[in-house]
Length: 110
Image (cartoon, rainbow, N blue to C red; front, side, top):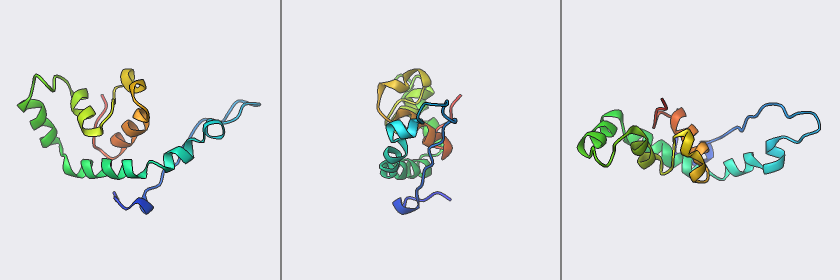
């Protein structure tokens, strides 16, 4: 069930087992702790997923075709960041936001 209650939102950072003698990404970069500070971002994405259905997204693209020339621009408007793999490096937390947005149905990746 989707919730906007920050106490109910949980993440689990998963990664492949580290190579022998090398620390895990989470140990090196404290990724889980960083993710745990982003619950408000996820709550906002949940609100958008509930509010902006496929018909709304299609209406945006159809009513302003010059502005929304492709789906990635609509996705960027909805998420506030880049969602295409080729652009994900352009803003901090883009991969995190994009992955969550896909998981909750706010956007669809090709």
